[in-house]
Length: 398
Image (cartoon, rainbow, N blue to C red; front, side, top):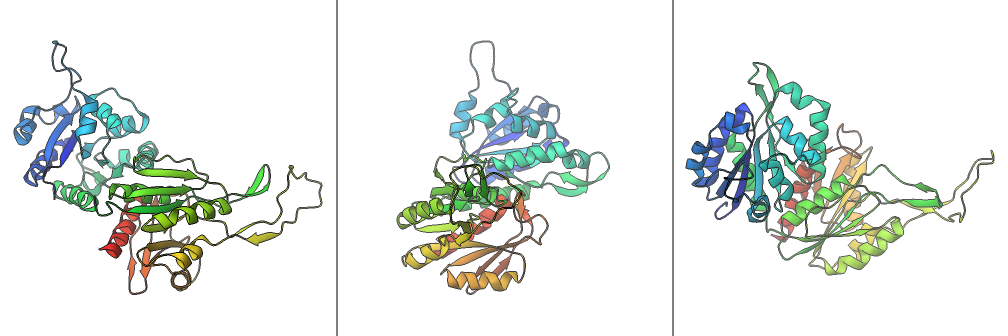
């Protein structure tokens, strides 16, 4: 699976750096070509001589290799790599990555990286749990970085808790799984809808919902990394896309999203409808700001056009269609009814009653329901949930 793959392995100043030797050997044995980039503090834990012996390549650490004008090009490394893996990643390096502090070769290489990036944190439990570390990890996740969650156990401090870097064998399986997904949707065009819609009341007010678009954007990134050409139709969100195979169309209202989705879908082989589209819009929008006069405000709402139902009605036999159901009661029954009514291949169910799922979080707890199966997944990052959804979609083509 890794034969011929180019992997940049970043190593930082953690006691877990000793595990990087085993990880390097496993990657090389699996067929990968590994280039190690190590921070100055990382060299205090493991020597470049040892790492170079394992990879057959000189280890990169400093910007300049001598006083003869030669230097290491972080740009070239970013173009060469099929994957960047940072293991172990300290709290300091994670913070520098999140905020663009390019004061060493590793972070500079990360900022130039064109390939997907994985990070395996390693630190003491209090450092990992600290809000600053968690905020930095959330920021990296939102930019498409895959975080390999550390395990709980005995730490170098003598304490026990969450912060142990995943074992090299586990990280190898994550890398294998990443490349197994790559190319499964090659040559296919995929429509993804994401985010909320805003239905105007007047020029300054609207009816909306709490969707941030994180789930839909994670789906777009996961699909692009699986080889798809992705058409992302997004409502108003503050997120950015990273992968060059994603073409983004920004809309505001349900009507605009309906127009974009129905226009784009005929040229696609599949669609995953993740957007939280408003079910109702205001019948008559005011042209000027409505003034408060003490008598209250009455709005007449009318149904919006149903995007999932329309795509389900018009889809060709060669097209695949998946939708989302966010429920608060009788979740599975409502999801199954929606699956049939809208002619979907499968539906992704999540519930606001599940802690850590739904709007605004970096995690989700989903159930994948089709006519013949029901797959309940644990609470996980939205990127992991997105990968599970894309895996499910790929099986429909397989």
